[in-house]
Length: 405
Length: 191
Image (cartoon, rainbow over all chains, first blue to last red; front, side):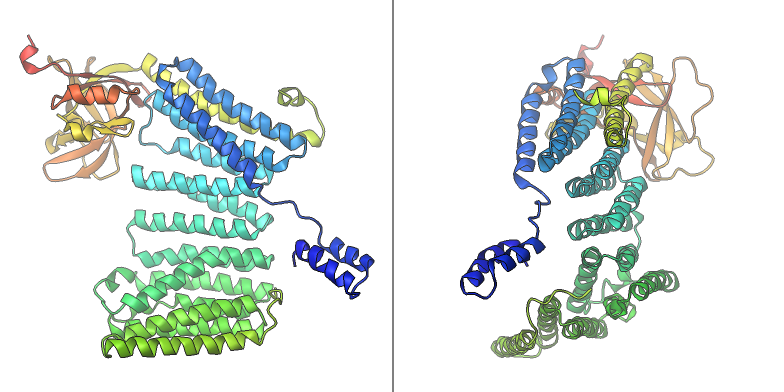
């Protein structure tokens, strides 16, 4: 519950004699004023100032002597770091972190511009890698969520450049993100950072699969490894945030199979060597289930339904139907767990997924066979009925129940 | 300005600041190293001139750099001196020899650095991009030239369909970089 809510509503409660002013104060004390995790304005400000300085210098860049250019690059970077320290010491945390982030960005700009100055932009990712290292190290030193997110972004950028422009995969950059930032998140779990880290790691995995030219379904082995890491994390909200991106990817993939699996022409692309692939997936599955068992939330093992390798079915209708069955089983499990744990957010999620799946299934199975107006009429009625029924069930749960750990 | 004196203090509170100082110093050092590598290549390296294949001026300028395609970017297969067949992504050393026209041409392609070369020959490191029956496609990390502001258009206009002469410095430690780009004299103007 938010402090603001109690501040405003509590006033009414006191006026109506429901609670005493003293009780109101005690209630308020339960929710101490939180410092904003990320102060947006100073950050935006530092970004804009940095950009304007950059464009001013860039316009006259070529006319400046080399040593002056080098001095400008290093001077502005060191200046930003010193400024950051200055503000941090005086307790202006977001301003200080904003300046440190600016220093980090200037470090990247310094590497790129110095390389260009000496025509050194060859086929080498070392410079970008140094930038990633700096990002990770600063995250640890300042223990800041914002720097963490910036470091993930730099890692994403470095890998994208490495694969896109240099056609080589930077394993070091992937390891830095998984090991360095992953370790940081493990020690200081946080929901937002977890979701962003997982997204970054999925990006690294996707690029690796692309680089190795192996079947795209291999993507789910590293992706589910990220998911399994979440199972071992004791902090549940943060762990759930880390697990969301891999699950979203698996769900969308399964939905795609349901929609387009019928074509069958490309399903060959989805079938890796059976023993190796399924063995690896089972290994990750074991790791995940062990974690769920150790942390006492085995019921969430139903998430793994999405990973059933239905694409080993022959393409065509059997594949589409198998995918739909899996999707229904998964959404059913989300709904069931939601009702079981009285978690309104999960019931809502399950409802949305259920309706989405039904839409796909209905479209898939009846588009060919029905008159189009009847198709839309029946489909609309089906969805309206479904949503009415599910909403009614969802409303039977008290809405503000905190998610059970 | 407060950072430097605190470097020499001790105590738990200063541990953080010492880490910061270390991290910042490492970053400064890295940038200086990049710059140092750049100037060291041109001071210790050997100068080589490479000719680019005639370029389509519309494709020449891309952002703030020009894309260069050298004569030595595509080499005939018989120049390959390895015992095994060439493979993609492998590093190679291309032996270059000066010609009377003022630029260098490729003599041989080695899978490892050649032990001894004639005094006026230079080994340039490259990587195999593609292999086909007749030849090899190579890259050298010299395919981009970051042009000074405004000079790109000039280069583009004057170059037309003429080749460019690219001055390259090749360091003894395998690194190389472009030092200058000029437009090759027209064949008719040559003595």
